[in-house]
Length: 284
Image (cartoon, rainbow, N blue to C red):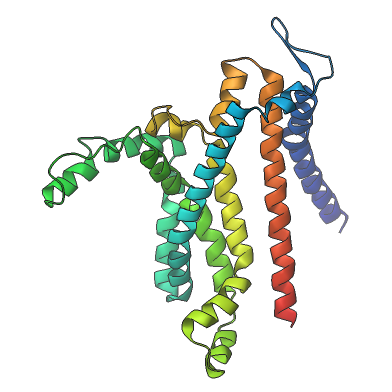
């Protein structure tokens, strides 16, 4: 019995230590640096300043932030639009079919994301697989320019982040009690009304969780705009990277990182709120 308690304490202590060392401590350091002043020689000067946070509201930076939010939001919406039907079909299919579909979702995780992004170049470039296939089928006469456009960035974001949308949706839909839908149909509700009034509210935690897992990484995946967009599309992740590595403005990069962390906190709050609401509906 004592050995089990020691083992549990060791595991819990190790996890807490890991989170503190590689999660909490770096965030606290970023928060501290964000309130300091940039120094040309030492990178930062221990002088309190709110300049970095004020610069987040500059018009040029505000335009970039709005563009980042719109692109991340669009990518999240596309993932939800594609992922929800896939997750619904997988959750309602037989066990063998469901396992196969989930395996297809998990296969991309076997390869590094950066490698998969470079592989998309072979698909999207002018003489790539996509254009050759469309020309072979006679659907187009000349190659379509996809590479180094916003469309390529959206394709890369959706391709990379779609599994993060499907898995939470699948878990939420699989737990859905089918008797509720049957009761709604018995009471005269059509499929669309039952889907809107029962399925969507009860799977809202999966929707919010999937959107959170897609939206925030979409803001920070700087290498996808660089590789597929030709560095023409600036997202928040690209801006943070440039502040740390190119401009050497650590306070500004830290302030932008803290802003992204606050966005994550807001989405977590929305997630827990949706969980509470769905729990109340189930009790009713």
